[in-house]
Image (cartoon, rainbow, N blue to C red; front, side):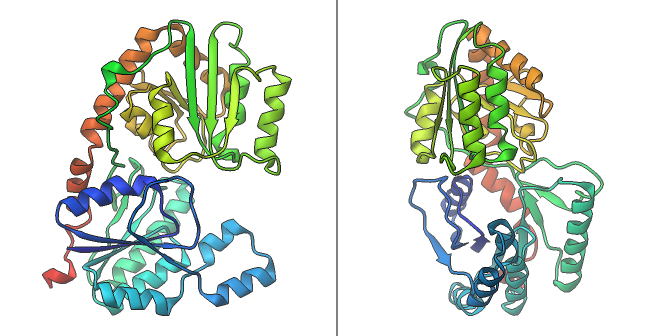
Length: 375
């Protein structure tokens, strides 16, 4: 089967599933628009599509912000149509409810191939979900068959009945066995966070929570992510908070690193913390589970369901420095608690998120619909 993905950017969270689909005999192509992403250092067979000239001209003239451009811009239709014609896919999968997605859907109908939507934010607000559901209904009415909408986030609620849950897949490095993983002693803890320096990641909340317990434990925190620049107000605020709280010897802020470097840093750490809010789906927490780390995240994380609360980590209320402090305290106090939670997280990653298992679920949830080759 020939599967064509079209997304605004390539992210490392796509690779394990696509590799597994290829191993299962599918031919996969990945098209990405000209928005770069620093989340991966691995090579992957992907092709960039430049945005069409018209939206670029309009956006530059009107000084449209980058985030809005991502929603409204579209790639060259002729260039995209040429690729679709040459590849002749059985199914075309496009991400999010953007202008380019509508163009992809129109091309799928023109070429008589099946179409699927992919979203990492299935819940959102009730209003947003209602709007998206309406769009899905319109697409279903136009299309020959029901259009699957799949998501890596467990979804609940009245507007999610049409969603197909396909979790992220992750590969467990064989050269990093759990039993050989280094652990700090009791009352010491090496904490790692992977997140860009933007408001919703709440890196400043992590720093604030640490100030409450820094005198109780020997703590070392490393944050990795894009945006580590003094021109970024969020990064600058975090730097200032470190200075004010006297945490310069405990907290280090780094820029982004290639994925293999991050995974190695995770393996050598004791605890992964991501206090983000409005988080559609976090892949870094699953990578942390795969190397055997306990994970702390908030209820506002779309993939909080990957964690078994109080077993493989802790799920806390968002924007609560006290809740975050207590969760960190729990794992700093006891090496045995960290090891138990880390082992459970690794087991979950290896079972529920094994690439071959996820690829099989993808086939059942998305490829079960009539494809062009079946018509």
